Length: 385
Figure 1 (spheres, rainbow, N blue to C red):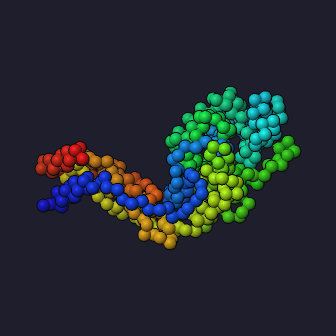
Figure 2: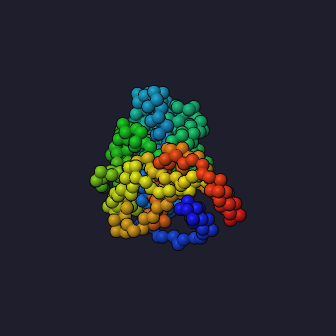
Figure 3: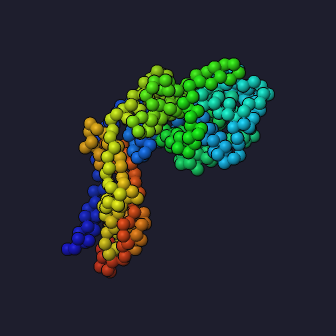
């Protein structure tokens, strides 16, 4: 039998065994957080994941999305840092001193520069600052919240929904840790001129000085953002980023019991992420990664990544890495050179750590009739399985 025919027969065997379960491996790190997600910025390697797609109330972590909408408006020229916004009675009552929530103590009917509002929201977690911005930009909190959700989809947040600008309890608002990491990564890379506000240690407004609420900023470990939050329903949460030893990591976690636990767990996970992994090249640029079967094709498709495939591997247990090529069968001939034909999925333990698109390194034409007939038989077998 030819190699092509043998490959197709082995594919049938793969179909027969694809439903068999394999034992899951334990996480490399343990945390008290109910939800957590940690990635490396440069390679995109997922270092830790726990209930990362589970929707939870955002609390003040919603303010990250509020600021993204503001930053985007400034970048596009619709706003400037010197624009002023009026303090409405709604903002004053709902998010000001009377609310007994996080506030910048904005005075009723006063006018405030946008840059001051940005610092109030980021450094002081000011609920009144968020409402002032929302009303000034969209006319109402409801309108602004719709803008937040629409913008979230545009930048890759797939599950998060926002019901207000500040994260105060609301039945609509939900976020996931994976989405929050995507958001933090976007803010830092897209708006570096504004990201600096997240490491600002304090801000004084209305003669009241308040320190940044991020407990990791003062530890001198390389953390330079981003936000903390708390609700009775979801507990204490944090979105943070660390830059050290030439690397940047992003972390989101929620479901912690106390402020102290939040600070300890986030610090430990960030430092573990920096120390416990080393960068390795799995495949060099233009290196052949593998072959995939082509339905009705004269040959299999040789696949390559668009560049080098680098990943962070655990230093103490590198043998826990596995990789597999996945694609949707039937992949029908003809295949054009350069067409995306699959994905390389790399796992560290039971965590899907990296996904890289794979492209055909050369064209694959249709094969002879007997090859197409065998592929038709395989497709029929797949249907019955």
